[in-house]
Length: 161
Image 1 (cartoon, rainbow, N blue to C red):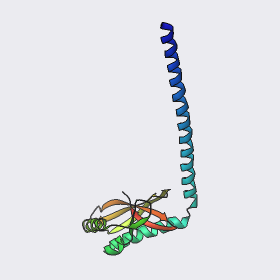
Image 2 (cartoon, one colour; image 1 turned 90 degrees about the horizontal axis):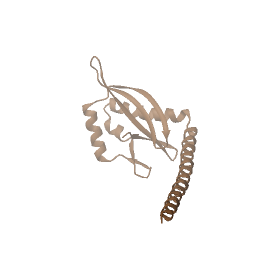
Image 3 (tube, rainbow, N blue to C red; image 1 turned 60 degrees about the vertical axis):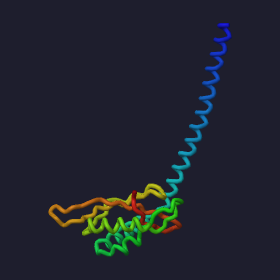
Image 4 (cartoon, rainbow, N blue to C red; image 1 turned 120 degrees about the horizontal axis):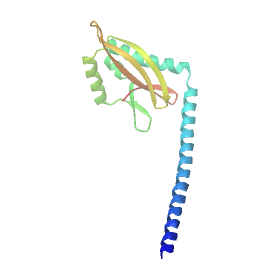
């Protein structure tokens, strides 16, 4: 009886080790392939960009902030998009427009300067700015970020979350 229990225990442990090691190996190889394909996709995206892309997203962002500094809020918000959930940019909704208009009343753009432009992935890029909203001494500033997205060869200005 003791031999049967010992034999069964060894058999169960061996089976468990084989099952977990074989599943783990398959998952890790799958994860490596998935990681490689993501890395390749990101590399393809980044190498497809040119200095013209950087200039275009800076221009879009600067135009938006210029409109705000000129109190042309409707022109500014007309430049903004959001994702439709499937990656396609669509105009921002009326609730977002109302929030942006209210924010501009509280923090009017007096001046701005670009801090950085970073391209990370097709749907995750960043243009960061410092915005001065009060001319006091020292001036009051805040940082804003835009998430420009390239869709069908055209750049769209979206807000960062």
